[in-house]
Amino acid sequence: MAGKGGVLVSHPGRQHSHQAATALEHAGMLAAYWSGVPSRESQLDWLPGWIRDRLPRYAPVNLPDHRARWFPIAVALRRVGRAMPTAAEQAIDFLACRAFDRQVARGLVRASASTVVACEISALDTFRVAKTLGMTTVLDAASVHYAVQDRVTPVAEARWLHKRILGVKHAEIDLADHVLTVSEMARAGYVAAKLDASRVHAVALGADTQLFVPGNPASDDHNRPFTFLFVGATIYRKGIDLLLEAFGAVAKRYPERVRLVVVGPRGDSHGLLARSISGALSVRPAVAQPELPEIYQGADCFVLPSRHDSFGMTVIEAMACGLPAIVSEMVGAREAIEQEQCGWVVPLADTRTLTERMAWCVENRAALAAMRPAARAAAERYDWAHYGERLAEVMTHIAGRSD
Picture (tube, rainbow, N blue to C red):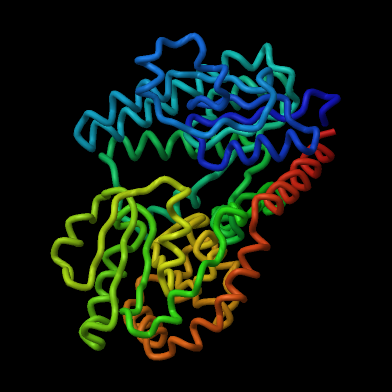
């Protein structure tokens, strides 16, 4: 594929796009990586220091400088949006994605690529131009299909904005030759929406299994409270309300014996934490990734009862640290969990089952600790190296079909 121009990866932020770019570079398939946040230190050289100091800080991506390009429009608009009320911030975030998309589209004519991978909501204009240039279009579907989202969670933004977003997503899917999802669960949603199954490919995400490693098992200390851990934004979609309800029942059953640690940015359901069992609940803001392993290592069980989570990278991070996990059936990383071997998959919004699983963990601390090696082994199958190999395999298949 490199001889034909290779793959251009574009993304208005970062998410897992830098992992895709570095994997394709390693496979000799990358034409370019265009992003909405800086990916190389050299991209910041032209900026005054006072501006550089105010930009979001990301680790440099391991790519040659000539492969990487930064479009500042997205980060500039999002910075404006953060100072606005929630409704305005959501609208500005949408505009940031659309502005980034238009900039990428204008640059495609000069890009030496035969295939473009673009993120949802930031792919419409890119795909329209790509089609005129004879390029293969691949949609990076970071979330589940919008029909699945609307079925299991209420609309999070204003109705007019939601309608605009759905219109863009629908048009992008129509223009996409192929769709990349981040789990088999997410792929199933696209296939259920009547997409040709041969066009939809699951490439499971991963975690840094060199950074996230087991520590000294906290569960060996039976004198301290049993610790459940949630890492993520405190939002309705992540099921924080479901977790608090289930944990409340467990805490009443085992007073003074359990605690819940919540780590992550404030979200739409953060107010529920204040009304929870204060003595048994510890809340921390989002922390830098290097600080997370110690937090995982200090817990006994990880819980993520999301209403929909296309993958759920924190599940793999936790398991890599040796934590058995309890997740809902709507978490894509459920595929890493061998039922009752390294965790459990529970029905969506079934707080009774969630409560009983959590209670079992408290009652069977030694048995839960014995699951730690299996959790680590399962996570090792989802490291970034495996992600890169799978992505290269899928992109090679797509290139072969496009010849």
